[in-house]
Amino acid sequence: MARVTAAGVTLGPARAALERTAVSLAGRAASVTRKRALDLALGSALLLLAAPALALTALTLAVRAPHGRGSVLLREARVGMGGRPFELRSLRTRRFRLDLLSRLPHVVRGDLSLVGPPPLRPDDPALNAPRTDPWRRELRPGLTGLAQVRARSGMPWDEPALLDAHYAEHHGTGLDLAILVRSARIHLRTELREARRGKARLSDTDHRPPGYSGVD
Image 1 (cartoon, rainbow, N blue to C red):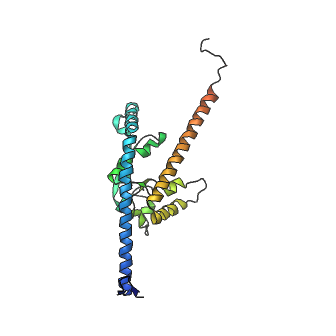
Image 2: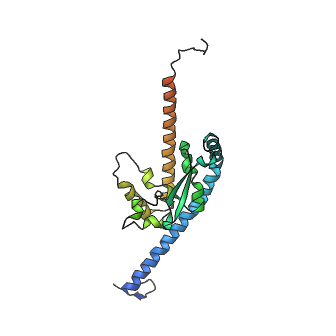
Image 3: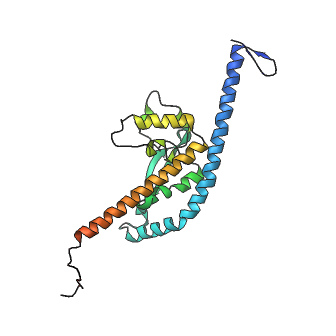
């Protein structure tokens, strides 16, 4: 069906389809550019803030590691945007989610995004299926994502992939910031809950009578 543009020019069906495709691609390119700008700005700021804690943790792990420096980092093969493989490096600790923060250099470098689908292994069936979702190669994987912040017990096995697909279709700066805030809240609540459990365990194992001085 022919279409008339704002300038009064009549376009044939094929030309109109090409124009819609061009507009869609231009909008997608602009969205990717904005997302990358957010990753660079916020990722660099977070890396600067986290650098002292990351350095201290790496030093502590190096001192405690039985095999020397090589045991400080966990190295895993992952696939990034465009099907490009990369080595994902994380500190070998999950305390205060420093393992995630230690991946911020990947965000600054462009291997990862702050928000996106999880980085998959090269042998993951989702990447090697005959009909792989195209968005898996069009988006950078993320430190966190919609599926992670919406996770719940009893979730159907295919729901994370559906949430990732929904994010791929609707992602934007506002959604990214909302996911980051919610992710931070979830991790903070988890750390507070673990801290309370730790105090409870210490209380349960302290059976000394009141006024005990430690001298028998």
